[in-house]
Length: 209
Ligand code: MD6
Ligand code: FE
Image (cartoon, rainbow, N blue to C red):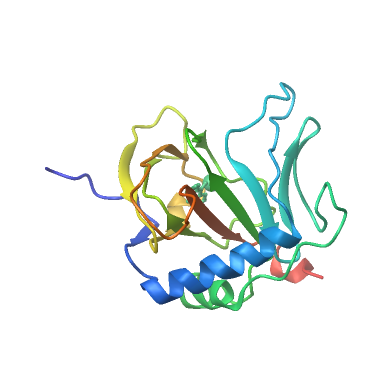
């Protein structure tokens, strides 16, 4: 098969996390989700629920409801601050982001049976100088990425447990999404499904608290 070159600025690091690191990260995320339960976010305006369930860790978390998308320091249902980001994630960011400050938010996406994520840009951050770093755990998915216009051609590839993707530079605002999750491709999550962790900078470093 002839594969198109990946978009400029996208780095795909298959198997960056070894099996022990995947287990440790899985357990750390389980602890986060016990303190900050997964929520079913709704689309702004339509109020339609997304099929992906979400939580966050770190100083800020991304939330979506009828009033819009935003970052906020507390869980919308419990009112508690988001749990701290696991050190392994801070370490991955320090190694890969090329950005001299730590991430402010880690969005946790959980894909159960049939969940998918439509083509979108990550553009609710105030600073696009930092990349978005994504870590996948559990079942493999088909990940789709295009250009900075929704109408640009796209390509897809499979993201497996332990893979890391960095969207930076020219790809920071590339459209991307998850077409589907391939059930039964990993035993990392005993109930199956897929976790994706995206590490983000929200505020310009000069304005960070
Ligand atoms: C997912 N990922 O893999 C969804 N966003 O479940 C994303 O939406 C994403 O992988 C920004 C950068 C990398 C990503
Ligand atoms: Fe995204």
